[in-house]
Length: 420
Image: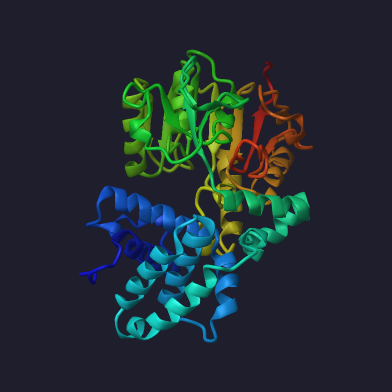
């Protein structure tokens, strides 16, 4: 049991950060917050994400005032307090007192470190230049290829976008608007500031679903038509399935995870839409009847989603990229075998790495004679986002004045033998 005076949400933050050090994502740690009130769970999640977004900046401040490296838990207490004071505007007196109480709750080593924490944080509260500190850098395994692909200025801008976090984006059914939400050029709705999804207008009626503006583009690029038979491979969490179903297509959503498909089913039901859900490995699945089109949102490094998932750079080391690249190529080849001549497929990944995007499409063109890329012409997108290969590349630093977007690559491929 926590000692008297310990803030339960802040205590939850320490458990979440320790879990990340142990290789667990924030979203996989619901058990770490068991027993906390829902409001405290939400606050702990927000604070943990903020610490991860600003860890290098907090460490720079802390390093000015400590003489000996603290234990990992005490370091997390210091980081949390610095971020609360200097980034989130928390009152110094209350934050410092809470941090000291939290430190003391950590056992004998915490009791011994409480005086140091108090002294360091009282000095850190008056630290100037926080806003001038550079943003949390991407890990070297990601930063180097990103800087090579897009340039050093773009890499810095992407890091700034990661630090800023992400607003809440919704994909609405046709004609749906929400008071206070921004209508983005591509048709998504954007809500700035904290929001409880289930309390927003239209949630119960299924007027929209949560989906980043960039994540909504692959289904639009596929251009689904009423009555078409379309397979959504690797479908969970399901936003693209809902888009295809809302367009009137006959959708088969295939995903290897039955648990994730259950979430897709819940969203389909809430939104009054239907699709056939199949729990299967996409590499083994074949349709019962000919398909018109396929949407393949392939497993990838997810490096385009760091603005939403700041724990990702702490959990990955880049060693899994070659295996993902191989899997993506096999998925592309299998998916192309499922559509007839003239059929089309959109390949998409939420990755910043060209090896998972642009290079995959170039390699697919070399393996499949007659395969072509159809240059996108999507409303609201910038022509500068179109790549030399004819795909569409989004990045977190795009739309900086609107709040950015996830990093995606997508391309629409057409098999020889049919037109338009």
